[in-house]
Length: 339
Image (cartoon, rainbow, N blue to C red):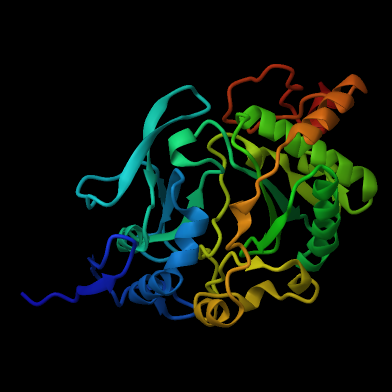
């Protein structure tokens, strides 16, 4: 019986590999008409910067067997039948459970993930071989109702200044939706909880400078029309869409790294699966040298200790986390007042 499957040749660090794509004409983005084969070819086109940004890290695959409008689920460990070039590393989850997690080392592994109907790639902030210690400080600027991408821009620029004062070099990318992600390369010498505290320290400093525009309030009822600095994205096993990863949104946007001087006037809707290969060919990869000179979080941890001494302690953790030392009650303020 004839099959629709196609075989793609994917170049990589170990030579060419052949990756079979079944159902290549399956439409993943109905509004854009983008197919599974289109997505596989996109990953091939951006393979080198994609692997540089997301490779050698535990990664979760957000999979959509029937396209972005259908059911979805996450894969963390390699399924049976994965090719030999798709590896895994043991990681520890917040529950203290240990489990193997997928790792992408070359473009062919990412194309294989597309064959498994992956649309969004979610890499950890740490390397696979040292997964307890992040080598990236990540801050998610999340627009709240009444705000949009343009409101995230001044917050990101101010955050860049905060991080520079702490001795860190900041990099920025679109989230692929309405927000911005600010990263800073760091030496992998501290575990996740300490990096979370460094993020909270930076977020509080940003909030002091832009109190009417930025908030660290975990509870939505307290945020107002401000940019939420999502500190909980710094936790173990908390991830965001990786650089150059597609998003499951109708116009097929991509989480796009930018130079800082591109940020003013940037339109995140123009960075898509269809436009990104040409952008890379003409502009290059703004994150190519991200890890050339990592910094430390020592200054930020000093700010954290100062704030703790001033009465600003731990902030809430995600609801699926075990109760953490020093954490405030996990009840929204309005409900607590009623009680």
